[in-house]
Figure (cartoon, rainbow, N blue to C red):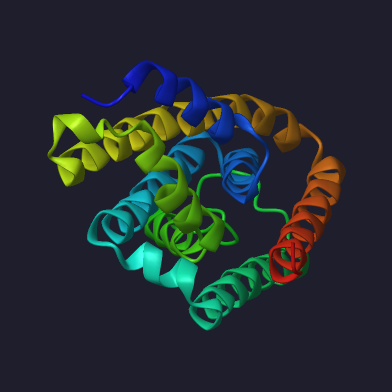
Length: 204
């Protein structure tokens, strides 16, 4: 069996650290309420299945070994974050009001979150570099162990993102009463996404 306990602590530390996933779940929950934040959380957690399959099947190792493949994936992810940032800056504050036409529909929030996670090359590299460190090579069944570790990672990520979504929903109630504050939040979120995209695009 892999070292589940130690892996869980490391995975939770990584998930809690500020990143594009956390920011999107937080801002989406504030903008449209707890349900939208939870859908975003589910989308980002679902995207991790893609990285799991890459790691288990060995494609992540190919991406790591090929600078061209890594660069293409990195720039695609950076471009998508910048795109989300620009769209956020140009949109009106989508405070959750029944029938509000500026709010994103839940399926769109879900797939937007899935794609954003899938296009993050750092998650791919994390899975290929991190998962094997907690695999017990003497126990055999390496792919099965990696699948188990990935499942633990996805479940804890979903739990943490869901907690963030619930918190953001409460914050969203405040912004329903403060339209000007929501406008500034929209601008802040847009700039944050653009900044994250630029950071991913730049060399380490």
